Amino acid sequence: MPLAVDLSWTFAPGPLILVALAAYVYVRRWRVVRREGSGRDATRWHLASFLAGLAAVLTALVSPLDTLGEQFFPGHMLQHILLLDVAPILCTLGLTKVLLRPVTRRVHRLERRAGPFAHPAFAVVLYAGTIWVWHIPSLYDRALTDPFVHGLEHVSFSVAGLIFWWHLVSPIRSRFQHGALAPVLYLIATKLLVGALGMGLTFSPDVIYSYYEQFGTIWGLTPLTAQQVGGALMTVEQESVLGIVLFTLFIRALGDADRRDIRAERLGTG
Image 1 (cartoon, rainbow, N blue to C red):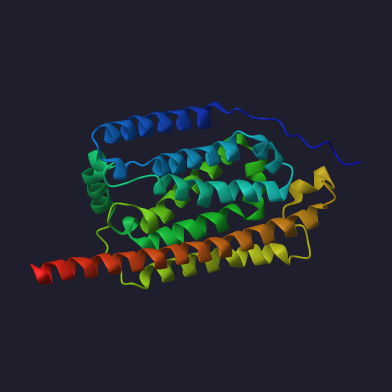
Image 2 (tube, one colour):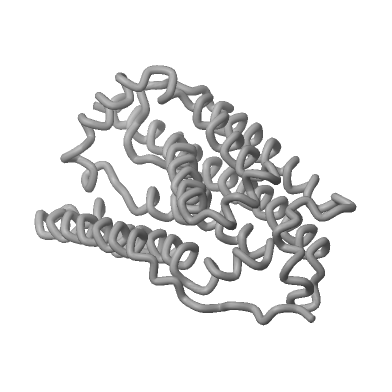
């Protein structure tokens, strides 16, 4: 007989404190920029985006999704998606050069000191490697039974996601100069590496993560079917994000080209 599904809230103090602190710091800085009259650099859209990113973190770590992920493979996949992609993208899009002005120089100094670890190639390896390593069966099952390892997994996902998306959507220009195709190659290489893992999980004929077998069938899905659904979810999400971000980068490139043309015309007529 299958066990009852636990959908309780966790209210873990760590995520709650960190999210509250991040929200306080961001909102305070946002209000200062708004008072100074830089409305274009601190819009309500930026505020909503950043707070939505923090809400994604709470959904992953505090809501019933956290307990569901310990019993149901697709639930764990949703957690990973929120921590690796949704939260980092939304929070980074909520930042602007003006909002970050107090720490811009520190970011540049940190980038210089980090050396090769600040290079986009490292971000690709870190992002894909983090996902692959944590899906090693023995380590994956350990994370589900050991709270410390589980917390370490979540932290590593969040860090890898922030570093990866920072190179693409950060408002602070990196010291690394890239050609027009660099962001495309950056995205495609990463998403294909992760998508391959999703495909492997989707078409695996056996249950890879034995931990879930103790919970039996949940919502009509056996552990094997749930694993396949989770793998498909990972694959579809990776490819969807790839398409959306590539389209966004294309639109941004067109806008930058138009602005360069306008500046060139003004200088020419002057």
